[in-house]
Image (tube, rainbow, N blue to C red; front, top):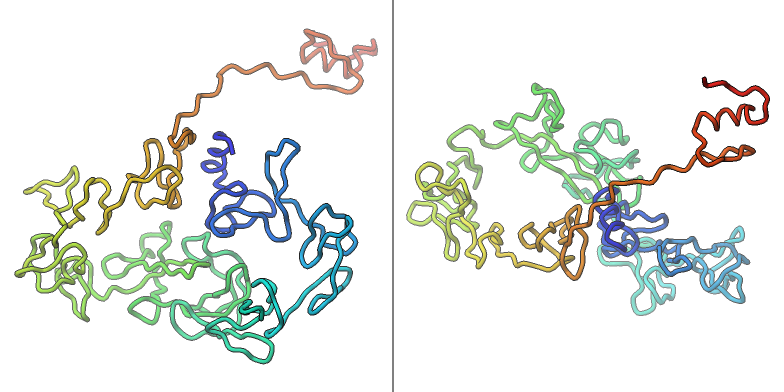
Length: 416
């Protein structure tokens, strides 16, 4: 993909072209493409095609009817023979309503995982078997309902929209009782209700909201509560939970079922829990001190007297590549990254990968600035009106006059 198209796709539409990197199906721009193993690829019902010049790849639907014309491939389990899609009726394959369909049961023979069409089955030693964690019941594999965030699953439910698009799940977006949310498998709208819970309590404080636009009286109060983000990979929701220790109190840190003072670098302590939990800092001789191979974190605001350091960072060859308790390494363009400083000049860490910033394009492993477009533009071509000849130098008024009959001597409109 050329540089301008690459930047347009990345920074304006937010979509990835075919064979580009992705995280979700929604990241893929081309019709018929899905996100498979980190890249946008054609859905199994489609195949990748290109134009006459071998460019502009796209996903074209495969012929799916018995007898349909084909070039070299049909939608499985059909195959292309003598220019037509044909169905081999053997084993679990049959013709139904003019379509070739295949179904398999546990114990049937197979050659690939997707030959096993029964839920939670896979191909092992050329036989469809139930995967680990499921129970075989007759010719089926059954997986028990589960609540990823804890609690017991309730009634079946239907999710009406994708809540991951919202900071808080909109009201009436599923048919679960109050205090529960509809949990579903990927790409499914039907699931089961699960309780919405806090890390240290069984119920969410529904009097308050974590919506940034909520009125102040209804916002989750940060001194006595905190916003907890729930997510199971397919939905996310911020809920207001009660703090075990008041954030304004001297003993604001909750550890070992107690409210204790929060420690900072060089402050008094009795346990490592007060010193950042012992990550880079520990309690030594009653004082929070940096561990071995760590040093006081320093930035432009650090001042030994007015604004002393409050945390510790890892000893690294390059101070800017110190991240929490680890040392990062500089990486080339398109490589995996965690922080901006790892990426080359004029690039940034986007979705965990070093990519050129807006206005720059990759070239020989570097990000080079895209030349500004020309400021001069050619004059637009005059509108073409059927039956009205266009003479050089004709202006818009004359064209209208011709169109309304002036050119044929039938009156027209006199514009003065």
